[in-house]
Length: 336
Image 1 (cartoon, rainbow, N blue to C red):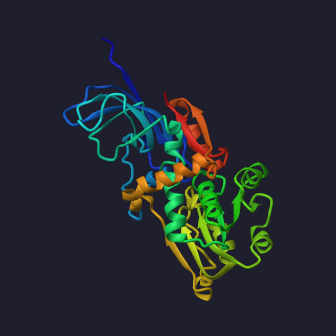
Image 2 (image 1 turned 90 degrees about the vertical axis):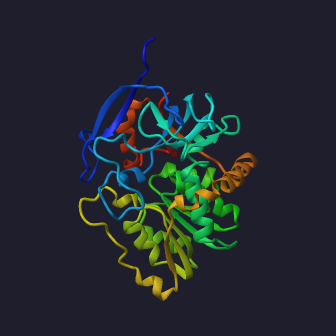
Image 3 (image 1 turned 30 degrees about the horizontal axis):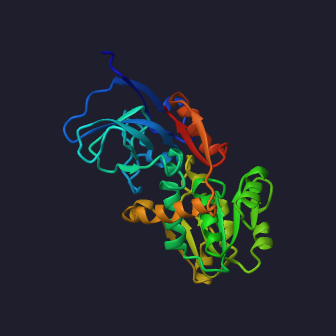
C-alpha cells in the first residue's frame, strides 16, 4: 500500500513588513494513522484571513501565541474526517477548526466543529457561517449595539467581515455607509448588498465624503483597517457613538510602529466608546449566531460571497491578495 503524502507550508522566518516568499518553507511527510482519541482530517478548503499576519509576529501584545518558526502555518479550515479513533467523530464527517496550511491534519477533537454540507456549501462555513461572520455578528450586535435609524459606517466593507456587518446593520434598521477600495467594490456594496452609500477611499477624500453621507454624524463605526480612515471617522462621531475595533489591516505590514488615532479626543468630546472585539470570546454562542445567520441567508436577507483560489501551491500568492485588496469577498483556498 502506497502511503499518502501530506504537503505543508511552514513559517520559515518572522516577516519584516510585507511577507516574502522566503518567509515560507514547503515540507512533506507521510500521513500516519490516528492514535487513540485522534482523528485525521483531509483539508478541503483553507480560510485566508488578515489575522494570520499578526500570528506570524513574535509579539506579546496579542490575544493568541505566535506561530513558531518551522511550525505549520496556523489557519482555519474545513475538511473531511478520513480516519478516526475518537468516538465523537466518524469517518466522513465534515469539520471546521484550526487545521493549518496543509493537506492533512491530526486533531484530538478539541476545537473541531461538525458542519453539514447539505445546509450550506463548505466555503460558507469559513465565511458567513464561520469566523468572519461570527466576528461581524457579535462585534456589531454586542459591541456596536446599533438601533433602528442609527448611521453605521464600516471600513473594509467589501471584505468577509465588513460585508456581513453592513448587511446585519441594514437588517436591524440602520442606515449603512461602507468604505472600500475601488469602484467595483463600492458598486457591489450598494447595488447587491443594499448599503445606502459607499465611499471609495482610493479616489475620494474620506473625510469630505463622510460629511456628505453622514450629515448627522456616525453612531456606530466598525473598524477593520485602522490608520487614516479611523482618524477620518473620529472627526464625524455623533454623541454617544460606539467604535468597534476589529482589525487594522492598513498597519499589519508596517515596519514602523502602528499609527495610533490622532483624533482620539473626539471620544471625550462626543462621550463615545472604542472597544475591541475578539471573536473567540463568543465561541460558546457560535451555535446561536449560526442559526440566526443561516436563517437570514435562507430568506435572502444576508448574501455571502467567496473568492476561491485553487491549489495548496497557490498559498503564498493567495495570501498576498489579502493585503493588495485583490480579492472580492471571503478569500478561500481550495486544497482538495
